[in-house]
Length: 263
Image (tube, rainbow, N blue to C red; front, side):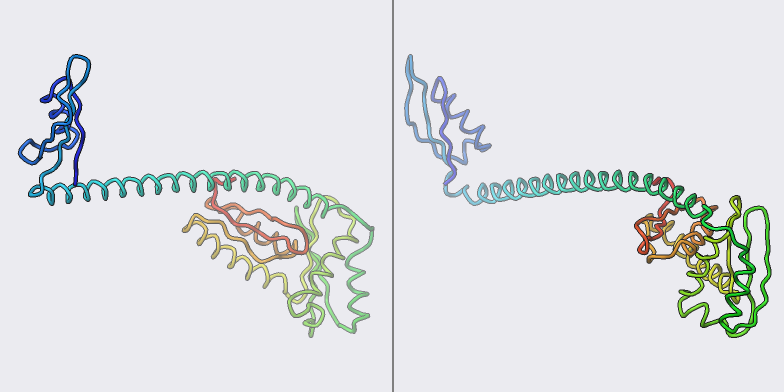
């Protein structure tokens, strides 16, 4: 049964108040007078939906309850979306903070890499080393405003380079350490390994940059040595859609490519 108690100065006012609360016309209800009221007492009635009109109101009541439930679910959904946006914003803020710190660390790392450890003639060192290894090689030195490149050419240099360039990278690091030039970067290329590596990583960098620009989401590359990371940075330094940085500690330091403007 759907019923409401109505209270008023008079019985009619009590009935009117109950009908307003039930949102029902007088012809759809049964009225029971509980108190006629008096000078110091208000009238009270019990107004109930009649049996013949009850299905209509029960259907309406169910509709109202479903509507309230939908509204409640929508409010919960909005609250979750707000919480998610807040969490995402906090994560973006944290990432930007990390990015700024990593940029500082990157500049510091580059300066440290350029420090001189020993004074030695790299070309003579390379000749002696390959002679000891039994390799007949030709060494050419190319120099421009920024770089000094030692190019080693010869036959059967794969075992020196290594399966994944392990030997090349180790020798490349050693050459940098024994070079006394302060204002230029030192590069080593054995059997065109660096040239092929630059081409391969440049293609990879551009492919991933396209993906980042398209999706708007950053990408972390697998850990790389400093030389390979520098290739990635150089390949994308003029791409106005993305920015790169290195994150982590050696030997698991990684390059991150992320959309421009997220600095």
